Length: 294
Image 1 (tube, one colour):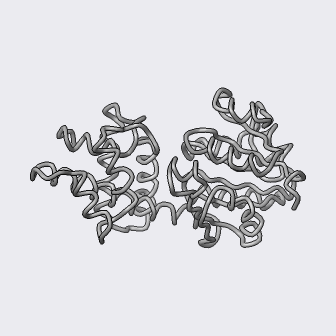
Image 2 (spheres, helix red, strand yellow):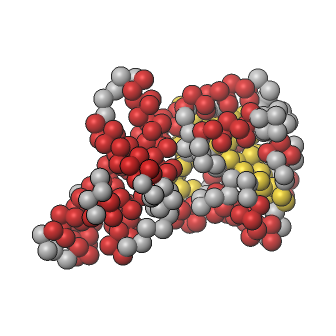
Image 3 (spheres, helix red, strand yellow):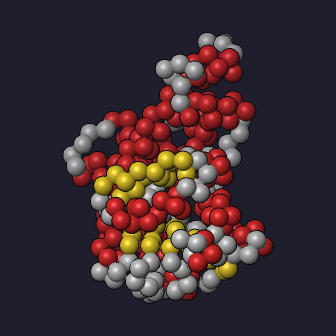
């Protein structure tokens, strides 16, 4: 399909959404945007993107719509409100929700959309702000294979890996598994560094020594360095990680699945959110360990 004949919509221009929308706009000239704060769209509007005052208005102009918002309640609002996407998008539209949300909500969107001739994918991502900027996200999809194939040309501009995990909701289940592994790696990185410091080792050298072996991980390489530098600016917010872990924990409990590390990680980020760290990056967990606040 000729890129000039495609109308791409993007809803949600936060830390990751803005970078993703910019990469899509570089490939598709006809991009429409909506976000709660119009100022977050300033750079895109300066580059020629079109602003809309509601998801409904945007939906009426687009053939494919991406959403990347904060919480499941936000997803529900932009899709199902009277000024939402699904009652205003034309049949044949492709909707791709990239928010980390609940599998149940993903299935609700899929069913409602399908009844109206609209294709829907749940497609949460991993890779953080760095992956969004570099177009190197991993994209985990749930939905029909035809919709997935239709989405692939767009995914090429924002990711380096994308997989169809199964039907509606399976992308969200896969992202939950991803976040459980991230939590384990993040806690492991913090505890390894605190151990190294307490034993009077040079923590930067420890990072170099263990990062290339079996202990190596994205968290160790990227957030480990930020921890030691005292850089707690958000690449991924504490409050959003708490949301992700809480969704995973709720689903696990409903399935009567006992995951002790998930419970522990969720409690850590719940404490951080309640004590003033909600808008810091997840690497701020290191400071809570250092200060004995957990």
